[in-house]
Length: 218
Image 1 (cartoon, rainbow, N blue to C red):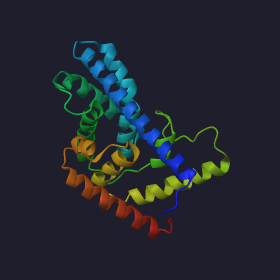
Image 2 (cartoon, rainbow, N blue to C red; image 1 turned 60 degrees about the vertical axis):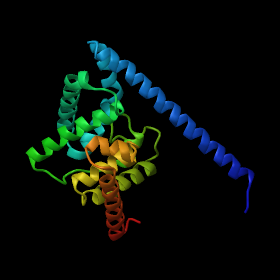
Image 3 (cartoon, one colour; image 1 turned 90 degrees about the vertical axis):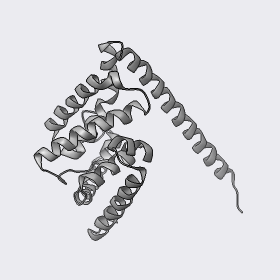
C-alpha cells in the first residue's frame, strides 16, 4: 500500500474540518438553547436574534419551492409568526432549526396545495451556497465575466433538471445538499421516516442524473 506525506496531510486537514464543524454545530445549539430559554420567558429581543440567524435559510428554502420572492417573504414571515406562537411548547427534543424547518415545510406545502402549483419550482444549489441572504441569485462581485456566464449556465442546467421533480423530491434534495441536514434531521423536518427520505433522495438524484444526461449536461 502506497502512503505519502500528502495523504497524511489530507487526512489531518479533513479531521480538522470535521472537528471544526462539530464545534460550530455544538456552539450553534448552545446559542439557540439560550435564546429559546429567553424567548420562553417572554423576551422578544431574543426571538429577533433567532430570526436574524435563520431568516436567510428559511427564505431560501421557501423561495426554491415557490420561485416567487414576494410569496417567499410572506411565507417566511408566517413561519416565524407560527414559530413564536408555538415556541412555548418547544421542548428541545430535536434541534431548533429542524423544528423550524418542519414549520416552514408545513406552511409552504399548505400554500402549494392552495395554489395548486405542484412541481413549479427551481433548484438553485450553486447560487445558494455562495450568495448572501436577501441576494440569493446575485453573483459575487469578484467573479469574472466568464465565471458569471458559467454560473448562469450551471443554474439553467440545474433548473431544467429540477423542474422534472415533484416538490417532495425537490425538498429533500434542498435540505440534504444545500442545508446539509442529516437523514434524521430531514425526516423530522418533513414528518417522514428515514427510509422515505433515503428513497426520495435516491430517486431524485437518479432522476437529476438522467435529465442532465439526456440534455447533454454531463
